[in-house]
Image (cartoon, rainbow, N blue to C red):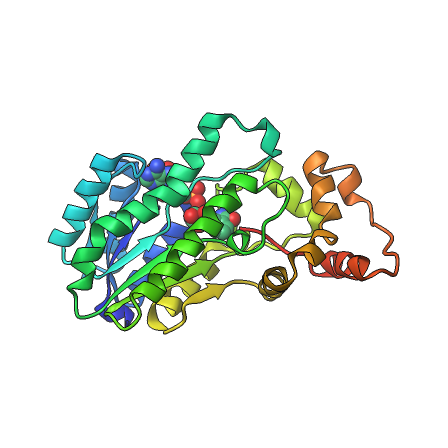
Length: 292
Ligand SMILES: NC(=O)c1ccc[n+]([C@@H]2O[C@H](COP(=O)([O-])OP(=O)(O)OC[C@H]3O[C@@H](n4cnc5c(N)ncnc54)[C@H](OP(=O)(O)O)[C@@H]3O)[C@@H](O)[C@H]2O)c1
């Protein structure tokens, strides 16, 4: 779909990638309905967009996507506004040793990152299916294809979201609804706290600016692609992981060490003995798989 024909409901609009996404979409000619939990932040962003592009149709509607009543109200508001694109971008971070997570944290992350986008898609699909053309874009992650130590619950959500998207894409093939999955790598937003930044530094993980992810979002919307992953080494590592996941296991020693103590073990350069696993380890050191 051309951005100029898109009327986009964008979740997570008040976050780093969401704000950049709203700016990039409206710059490309799309109308946007912004959503997040903070009415204040959404109103401020809507004003900012209107100031820059006075002719843009920009609306906002606050909603907590972990509440089913909010999902129903948001879906109704978006339909009344004549939406034809849903971008499920809202998300919650989760990083650390699995054994240290509280059950309530696990539940909240999966509710926000997996259940909410599935239920919002479910609420909106009958409407979207009646549009001449419509898109559902899931903002997943490279970690939805390549799981790293420290991201057990996060990857469970993002792998799940990718599985949901793949099945729905195949189910809706030939209909007017296109289902697409965007997999950013680590991106500079408030999503990544100091512990993640230390892990990134210790593992040599590259980070993108939100504007890069936003540009990829617009490109994906305007393309026929089913999936788009950002970052060459990350996409390659994700592909290798799909074919031979146990080969990748051997290349993640540094990531395990970084999880245990980022400034000690992880910063040490591992010798790379000449085994097939160690060649992945050493190539992982040169072009480390990234995350998110
Ligand atoms: N940053 C990265 O490294 C990275 C990498 C790959 C993929 N991603 C994915 O990209 C997406 C956006 O991430 P970001 O970096 O922009 O994060 P962010 O800056 O923390 O923004 C998160 C957004 O999600 C919204 N949100 C969270 N919980 C919600 C809930 N229960 N109901 C409604 N909205 C909720 C937040 O709204 P409030 O303002 O109301 O809190 C905010 O707008 C996420 O899905 C994330 O998994 C991020």
